[in-house]
Image (cartoon, rainbow, N blue to C red):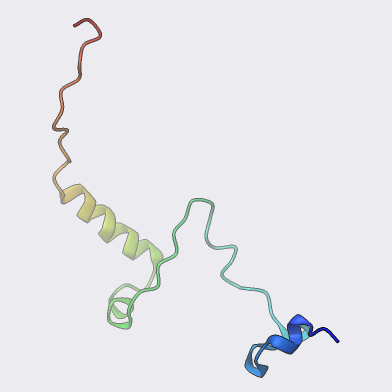
Length: 77
């Protein structure tokens, strides 16, 4: 007799999907978004995603722009 996939799983991995709930956060992340979990000490300071985004945007504005080390080459050489 062949084992089924359920027979190969440890008991702690066998889930009763009839009691599962939808992920309440799934719709919050839009297409192209990156979800980041903040450490507790950071989450104590920044209470909303807007606060985190504002600080990150300010940091980005304060950073020097990367300079290209190459000059554009002309098409006629």
